[in-house]
Length: 56
Image (cartoon, rainbow, N blue to C red; front, side, top):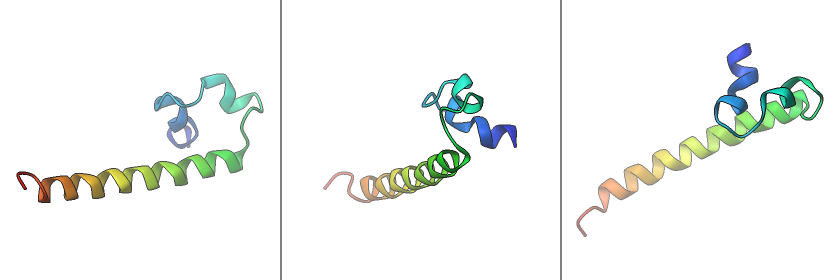
């Protein structure tokens, strides 16, 4: 649970105290994880596209 809760801190997007001082809610944490998954998928797709179009 700690890795899940502190993932935004590890990524540098939130500060540690913001996880537990009420700055963000549990819903905000869930939203952050959803956005991180979308970002990772977009980066994966871009990597595949750029490899496929290299040298054209």
